[in-house]
Amino acid sequence: MTVGSGDVPVLSTPRLIAWMEAATVQAAAPFTRTGETSVGTAVRIEHFRATPVGGRLEVIAEPPAAAAGGRLTFLLRVLDSSGELVAAGEIDRVIVDRRRFLARALGRDTHR
Image 1 (tube, rainbow, N blue to C red):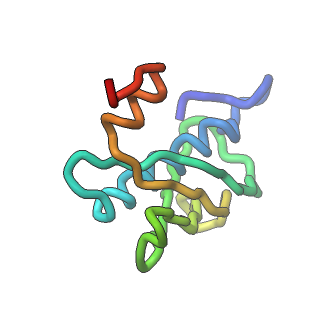
Image 2 (cartoon, rainbow, N blue to C red; image 1 turned 60 degrees about the vertical axis):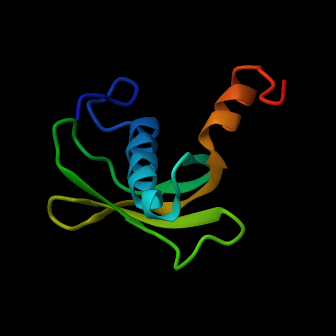
């Protein structure tokens, strides 16, 4: 870990959420087809314990059984090296067509 929180050398909540979201990206891959990806739509996380910068964490993203209408809700847990719960929560993702999503995000209409 290399990102602290404020003026104390502990893992910041934004960095922790970024790692949790990265775990959901990997866990969502089996739900996507060629040309699709998933994007985050909501984050509900609680950060319970401070973790020193340089500590080791395990991020566990439990995928849903199925994608309901292209929507996925992942249950997440983050454990420190002693197995203590550092953070937990949910992250929602939605499956999208990669090209159309990027075109909209960049302000281009794909139907021209």
